[in-house]
Amino acid sequence: MNAAPWYPIIYIRGYAGTQGEVEETVADPYMGFNRGSTKLRQLWDRSVIRHVFESPLVRLMKDHGYSDAYTDGTELTGRDTVPWRTVWIYRYYEEVSRELGSGERPEIEQYAEGLGTFLREIRDRTCGESQRAREAFRVYLVAHSMGGLVARCWLQNTRLREDDPVVAEKLFTYATPHRGIDLRLVGNIPRFVRINNTENFNEEQMRKYLKISSKKVPVHSLDGKFPPQRCFSLVGTNARDYEVAGGLSSAAVGPMSDGLVQIRNAYIDDAPRAFVHRAHSGHYGVVNSEEGYQNLRRFLFGDLRVDGHLEVESITLPPKVQRAKDRGSEVRASYHIEVCVNVRDTRWYLHRRTLDEGSAIIAGYDAMVKSGKPVTLFTQFLSSAAIVKRSSYMGFSVDLRVLVPEYRVGGRFLFEDHFEGSYIFRDKLNLFVKRQDGRLRVKHGWDQERTNAAGSTEILAEADGRWSLAVPVTKASAPGIGAKLRLTFSDW
Image (cartoon, rainbow, N blue to C red; front, side):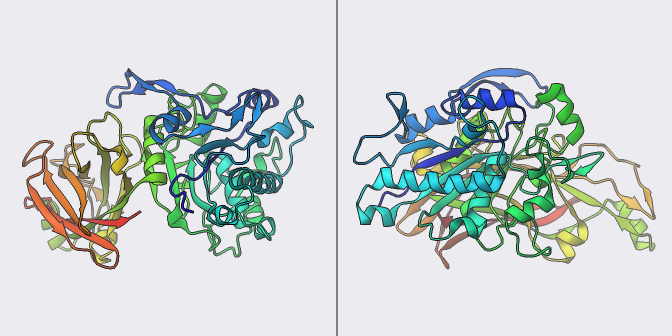
């Protein structure tokens, strides 16, 4: 039996701070997974346009034939088997409810232990007595915020996995504080602040329930317990639209965050990730967004993984800066790299890192040129099921920009002839990709050559299960750059 890729999806909701939020959460059959949005924030002027996103649940039903797990007022029962394409909600907050449970908050390990029990029940309902089906059984875990820590606790805490035959195929997290929650004036949330389980976001406490093996291992690491390439972290970068506590949370956490989780804390070490200009939750939140859903569906059901790296060979300086360097002055500069990835016929981005939104990549000259290490730009997943019907190609674009830095010459900033917002390189690469007889057919072209079109076609041969394409990134004038945009494709 082969049910791949249509495994059951288990949604694990995020943190509910107050008792009122707990009661509101358990009163919702889908604990928020059914909530959509009609608002899309226009980025350049912060105006709002109407864009209907029905919700992740509805879209999974429409696009991929999934159904929910409810019938006749309860979860599916009384059948020999339940469809594999079922969305389940792990309702772990019911035991915290004063109306449906004890009203007491257990430790996060108990939530994780309950998740294991829940997954075994789903396996039994899905597979029945079929040994073949039970051996093939897998689940997709989709978690928001603290839900991602519950999932990681189940995956990483071996005490909870003893004699546990359930296999997680993939883990997708929205805005999960994988390295805890930091506040601007306090730092990491203190462990002794034990109000409504807030200690779960303290790094020292996280190391205990995640069973991190050593202090040398970062807390956002899976520590060898689960393959990071089978995880995906969606990172929000919009702090201004997070309105919880009247904006106090956003103010306490600060910019370069989603309003609750700082960008640097929101991803799993060594795992694929995408950045989107969305808040932690709310009308402009990551879960109820087109960006979130499109990343989710491609990660779960996609055909092709593509990794983008910038291989920098040289960066030249402006003439005045170069002359100062030639005279022996020390020159320092850090370069901001902006990258946006989207698919054609859309008004949203799968991945967006820009300076204005506090999410640009920052790399020094030594890190880019002297070290010879490529700069990681993005990891994305492409899906033949999501392409426009009029074409057999999976089309996407990479908008790449390297900004002119503020040069520090001899310990002082040199602002002469400097215009803020200038670019060493700025162009958009359009790509159209198709599998063809074991090879990869790629059409590509920069916008400056042909707007929204591709002028060159290359047939890539497979090597070690991958296909590689290197596109020149050059600008001859000073300041200028000599580099390659390396795109590596692999089966997914």
